[in-house]
Amino acid sequence: MFISVEKIRSGVKTSFAQTISGTDIIVGARSSSLNVLLNSIFHIGISENMIQYNTFTRFKNHPMVDWAVPLSFGDSYRGNRVIGTTQDFFRRYQYRNHKPLAFSQGREFSKITETVIGSAVAKEANLIPGSTIILSHGISENAVLTHDDNPFTVIGILEKTNTPVDHSVFVSLEAIEVIHKNWQSGAYVENGEKVNIDNPNNYNISKISSFFLGCKSRLDVLTLQRETSQYIGEPLSVAIPGMALAELWQTLKIVEKALFSIGILAGLVSLLSMLIAVLTSLQQRRREIAILRALGVGPRKLFWLMTLESGFLSAFGLLLGFVLSYGLLFLLQEPIEMLTGIEIVITFPGTTELLYGVALLSIGFGVGFLPGALAYRMTLRDGLSMRL
Image 1: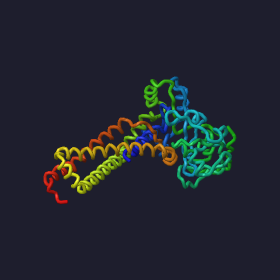
Image 2: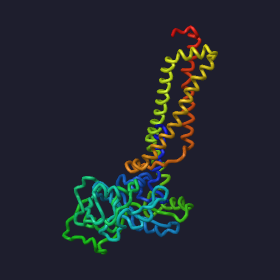
Image 3: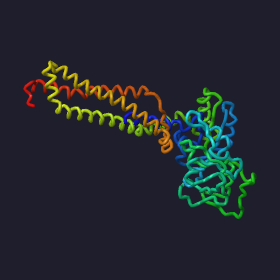
């Protein structure tokens, strides 16, 4: 149990840290790096401020930038975030050690009226390529205002990633602009003019929520981060995914401590159970102890026999625990990932597991000191005069 909890703990941390991979910088409106990360990657919170699209264009053409992907938030579909972006998102977004996105069905959008959805959205709403959906204005799951005058056709479904991408609906930036053409201050304004979503003259991208940047060289990341944060055109906040995720995990340190505490408690309960079992059996072995004493086994030898017995039980328990935990994790690896999104990597016991094993084994030997001391005193008190 201790090893299983430790593996799950490390799996949670690894899966959390590898939600996004291959993106060097995330740029958002002036806030904090954590807010930019939460909003752009985990789709938590609201983008209260926007970025000028010209700012994105400037950094997209920066000599240090290899690629750039814009993002625009604000709408939802059954509680799932709608993300306005470009086709480059499906080619550039990576997760889990540079694993790219892939389509289980269909393709990426090419028209304003087309949309790509995550696997979880497709499963929840029973959608397939060709299905029609209507987006809701705002991010509430029970949104009242909808964009029913501009329905979208599902053209592609992404494979499961166990990331927030699974719960996302992707449309083009132009689509975001068009469906909000007659909206002001969060409400639809009826002016008698119906917006034709297929007319390219109806959209003019002016603002976005954030954008991803990929640098040509890893050496340019910090330089570009400093230049972006000091951009005089408008106030910007910059997040380096790896550093921001590490900072976010520190704020969630209580989760890691809780899982670690569960593992410690599992080990202590096991050792306590073993101690109780040995003490119980000690009372039933007084005849055995007396016979050993009669055969010339001294009190010190009896003490070490009881201690070694406890140690051997601990060693056998650890060995059996390794075999059972790794066997169960191997069998449950895929179901756990499907249900929780936690990727459990089955590897040989690392330094942490081995150190914990040595610590538990040492404590196991220590647990044998008490029954060993009782056996030592029992031989002195009872000896051969023990009443059987």
